[in-house]
Image (cartoon, rainbow, N blue to C red; front, side):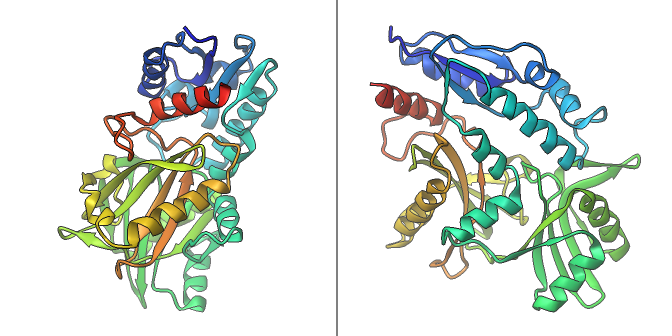
Length: 349
């Protein structure tokens, strides 16, 4: 058995931690030491074996961790992103202060990836193609800036969020509006739903946008995406040590292609078979990953334009490697976690 040892900051027992543990054990390593996010966020004493390679993973779907991050309430609720982000970055600082460990995910880079405005600025500054964007603090401000720029279609995103929580695909033509989102009011609380809804009342849209704007909004110009089989698609590309290693095509009939919102995995060869396009996708993802050189893995959401030539990055995810059953692009049969274990072992040697 190798003397390399992993530690993981995560939620004990959830599938992220379990799948990484399985990859480590399959590589002949000891089971990783798990540091619970609840302990990190509650200020309890934390530690890891001396010399461990420390992986920071998502708090996951732990209601207890969510309460420590956002305060009491329904875990499915939308909003509270600024409060969540403040507690999360404070937790990252505690993790970074641990002695005797080697981080394989830079906490400052993670914090940037969890702020859509900062992440977009970093990518744009590095010349990575991204949709043009602006910030908004209200529905009226959103409409005014869209009119000033001559934009009729945008994606409205909470500055801090994931899994399309609170994201709105918004169109405005004079007095007519159309907003597509998974957010819905449930007994006066705006909650995430597994069903995408369409709102066409300006009053309904204003109520949602103004509520979300309390945590600041990142607004991107709508990027017309290519379609396959009558469904628009984008790609989640995982990079490990800066190299694209895994990719999945996500297709859906709504503007949100997230798999938990009704999107489905499509045929990646639709993109790989296009001369020049696949190389462009990989090159752009590599450039996006290079913006975060101290992060072992990233999940790059990349869009292919309706012209089947242009490419743009929607965002970069710090915890975008949860893709069960997906083999690597090189055909070795390694999932995203096995690939990261292999990369660390190669570097350690």
